[in-house]
Length: 253
Image 1: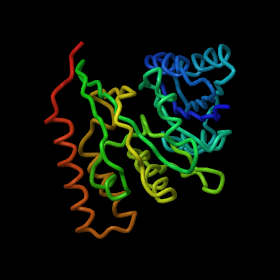
Image 2: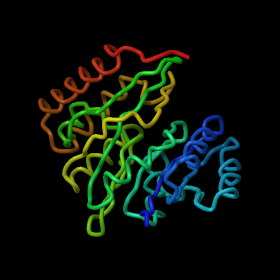
Image 3: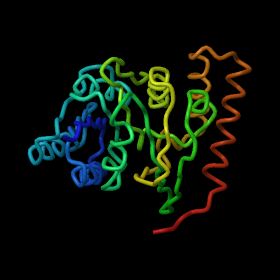
Image 4: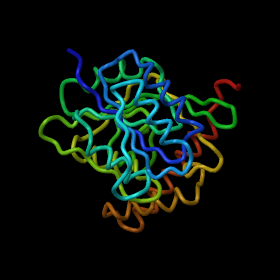
């Protein structure tokens, strides 16, 4: 019998994008999942859309965040509702290929572990593929790597407490990955492109100055010295430049 998988999605004013995420998840060839969607105080029609989704599929559970606001707080609220210790995340503007869960669940099926697949980035109507090749440790994450919560799947097993996201404005997903690797040890790559990550010009992930600050902040919070944290940020920035600007586009639309 297939194991139950918990999917957590935070939402805030995402009425224009949540439909593609919905289509992506209900089209999964692996069907034994629950989808926990947490609305973080949307002022548009997002919540009505979510209730409509839930009325069509009993695997979908919609909640309104009663805890700390922000993406990290919404995800942490969702983690309190999950029924499985195997968990993965998908933001309300991204999408998985229909075989994502089918490919990824067997990689963490038997024991506490973390796996992550490749993904494609869509930016300015151009697509770029990222295919991971190496096992990732916490030091790799601080210095730059291809792991992303868009494709990471976590099995915390029966004896390991599920990690939490940081309650910070940006890079809260980085905090979760670091906390998870602290518990489990490392993350294993699956060298296949199985998801699409959308980058808009006004997104937090596109604001390089803020990302540099938060990358430094997290390194310091984890006890790294000022010189070590600066080194980590420089290594992370150089890796990002190589990753995003010296990679040929796969195709345009």
